[in-house]
Image 1 (cartoon, rainbow, N blue to C red):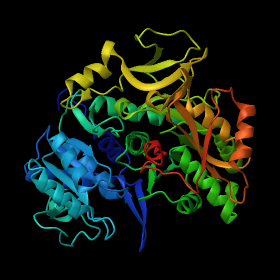
Image 2 (cartoon, helix red, strand yellow; image 1 turned 180 degrees about the vertical axis):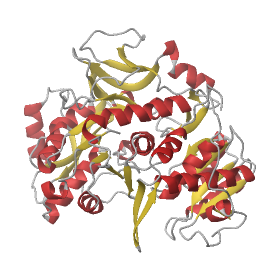
Image 3 (spheres, one colour; image 1 turned 135 degrees about the vertical axis):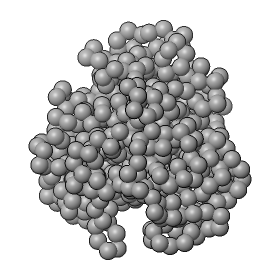
Length: 530
């Protein structure tokens, strides 16, 4: 191995070597909990890596991976990395047309896909996509029964891939600047783009994520921490802040294939969970579930030592309500797919500032700039730009978009924010979400924060809608708390007391729920289409 070798898979190599008998993964099945040690996980990843090599997968090849939160994802992820190939994680909800786009755009030579269900036949959709994207020459299907045949033609199963392969393999000596993972952006402003993240950026960000929580979670060699993973592993936060950080820390990781509030509360208690990462809508769902079911929140969360929120700004009222109900501190952080993803984080050894995402993490700089990319002084609002170890190499095959996003050596996030005198960063809103009403900037997040303090409101989302006179007008979508009574006239009167005249929403629509994506974010683009 060369002195410059650095592969993200070294995280698993190291922990499996140090603590092979320590539990790595746990997942509930119809036959009870399945538990896998670090030694077993490493052996399975080795078998899969050797199988990929036998298929002709070589260092630098791109391999797509579409799988929910099961041990198969983890095995395939580290197998691809051990070969020196690039992991291209795909959202499990993509349709054949969308899958084919990602396969063609990423130049994937192979795809590993979960078999799926009758309602979501993932393997069948993947086969159709591979037929469309002719460069993807091999489909490997993950079946729940390793001995089962593939449910689609012209494919092999993960069991066949691993059959007869040695449980020992050498991790390819990748260079630190080689691409490890290609994460696709959501595509809200156009076609999804593949952000290339290097082995060094992913590995360092995983270690930073581990160390951010270390002062709380590392409480003795014999007392292994239990991390509950409900965020999808195909997402940047699930990969870095939970999977890779968890393996770097030797944690026991309990997997939930999909978020379910009742299942999360059950896992908190039954698996003695010490740490959990969620998005704000998940925290909201846990509070609603506990309230409706009469769960003793302090009892079920007795082992919880730390919770983390990311993915979207956490309303301060929601954070305070959850911390009180569950008796645990929430640390809020911030990042993007292009930043591997963590860029800022409230620290356990410093006071949290609710409403902020904390200061930048180590080896990461954050500035706020104006429209001409000039740095703004403390306290002024502008676009957040970032540079450091965690920044992507660029967008795959998109030099113009890359040069625009990384102009001046800083990644331009498209987020509007402000930095206070202590260096804490606050996210005001997305550039594209800002409402320009009669020439005045209105930031939806500010409106949402205040709406969430209303005693009858459970959830709120604010967007801009076209207006002939003002260009845009403010509209609020409201979910009432169970049993609460609130009319649009009453809420409008309340808003007039809370906001300046140009800010308060003139249009109010009550809904039973708000549309959410696979990662739990409110899909404002769907609200705009209604």
